[in-house]
Amino acid sequence: MQYVRDMSKAAKSPRATSPSDAQESAAGTRAATQRLKMRRELAAAAMELFATKGYEATTVDEIAAAAGVARRTFFRHFRSKEEAIFPDHDDTLVRAEAVLNAAPPHEHPLDTVCRGIKEVMKMYAGSPAVSVERYRLTREVPTLREREIASVARYERLFTRYLLGHFDERDHHDGNDDPLLAEVAASAVVTAHNHVLRRWLRAGGQGDVEAQLDHAFAIVRETFGSGIGAGRPAPSSAQNEPQAPAARASARGDVVVAVARTDAPLDEVMRTIQDALSKG
Figure 1 (tube, rainbow, N blue to C red):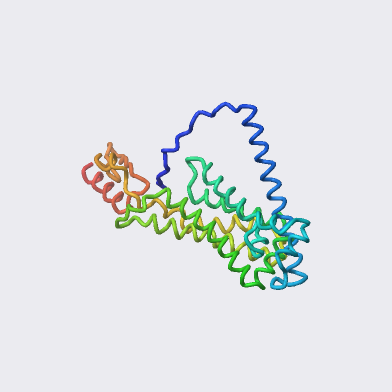
Figure 2 (cartoon, one colour):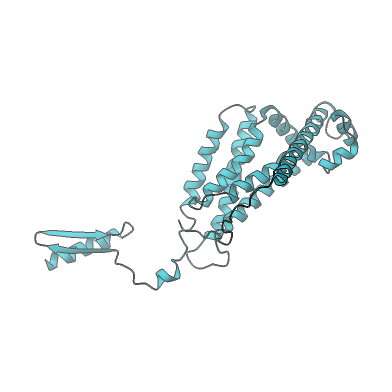
């Protein structure tokens, strides 16, 4: 598998951390934690009201009151009431992108994407009861279903950009389907994840969802992984060098010694051996 990794982002020497930097970092972490805590509290209040009063009958003011905050606090965290039942997607998207950015150079990009989308599954699996109830609501309320679809589309765009980033989209020639495979593979990873997630949610959040996800990803990798990079041409320096024969053989007394590349066609190997025998 050959692919191109952007080498422009070379590792830089770490800058010494000052006490003020550490304080700012700690303060930022606390603020992010408080933000997520409030978003989850608002989401819990919204889901409870949706379940008891119904989605259409529930107002933003009621959600804010149930969470013990003012209306303006609600709108600092969510733009609408349907957005309130998806409090973790923004943070999960950041974590998934962090997995992609920290990928080791030797890792197949499709494996990296599979690891990245596991952050999404962790979000759902972390609160099975909440996830199951949210799934029920999205099935009943078209507006929530549309919001969920929009959230899924963000992940798919992230993973597609990542895979395409390892290939030259302008490098279209006969036999090189990498750009096409990158987009299809990204969609396949997201589809596999969503299939496993729905099955787990329909089962009430029961079962080893991680093992199910690994099985689904293995199918995706088997289907697409070996194809990505197969159509890329050899580097220009290698193209200018004479290519070694696929197979060669020589007769030494009563023994024929043959050496062949693992990708050499069988008929070429046999023909080379026969030629050596006839000359011996």
